[in-house]
Length: 376
Ligand SMILES: *Cc1c(COP(=O)(O)O)cnc(C)c1O
Image (cartoon, rainbow, N blue to C red; front, side, top):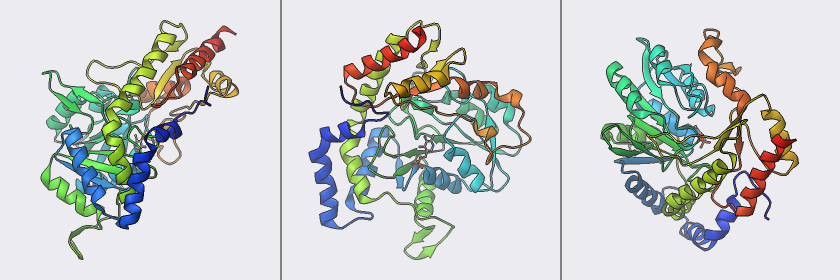
């Protein structure tokens, strides 16, 4: 059995090594390191894959969020509602732009933003909702989009973790994660479901005006060469990263399937266990398992975390502290009562190894080790 990794990028690379090596070498030979034809090719392929009008590649998923919020002309003091249980980038960018993050609770079973909590948090200052499609499945977009319409709010989807997931509306319409909001963002960080070999990110939108603005902001606010219409940033996807993504995008669906297969293996092994709650897949969204996250009841989570490490099984606590309790983002106005679920989740969640390259023997070892912990 090969050593178990949280994310096995090496085995994945080994399977596509000739194509990846050639793609990288082509860029090196061409010396078009910035804005080479690979970037445009990737943009077009991703637009087609997602069925979205515009993809604007940029340097990473955090920049993508920042650029998206800049493109919406949000003003200091505007309130942006987002999830208390997510990677910090989402709220960091809101705060950096001097907007006011308003954190809300999530659902315990999907880990995604709680619609009732969003409703309660809306004030006259609210300008946008940022649902994060956490761990690989979509937040419940239909009620979010309805709320946004009713209150005239933007919806910014943070799709760093769910590229490839599909949402089904009540009338049966299906849309890919990241194509439903006003503007959407993703990350190609190596361990993401569509990862490059360094940093990368993108913004998606179906709105032509927003797309043009976004593209300009990502390029120093330039309208035409050396004419600056607005404040911008420098945020580009390198040609080498785009070339790697061009090899990997056609494999994304098979990667999603491989992750689902591993998740099913885990689910079956842990089914009906009295102390383990397995992740659910909602009726309205497919799941692409960026993370496979269990909830462990009876305060045994930390002991399980240690036990697995002792047995050479990497595992992680995503996330150990809710954002509303972080020094950087805490706010005296938050009432602990409003965060019952996130306060509980940080104590109970544990994410097991999840990637595209498992050997059955590894999954067997991981599940048996988890189960043996509870037998002791
Ligand atoms: C990874 C991630 C980001 C940031 O992406 P980077 O490319 O690392 O900047 C933002 N939001 C979420 C939910 C993420 O998981």
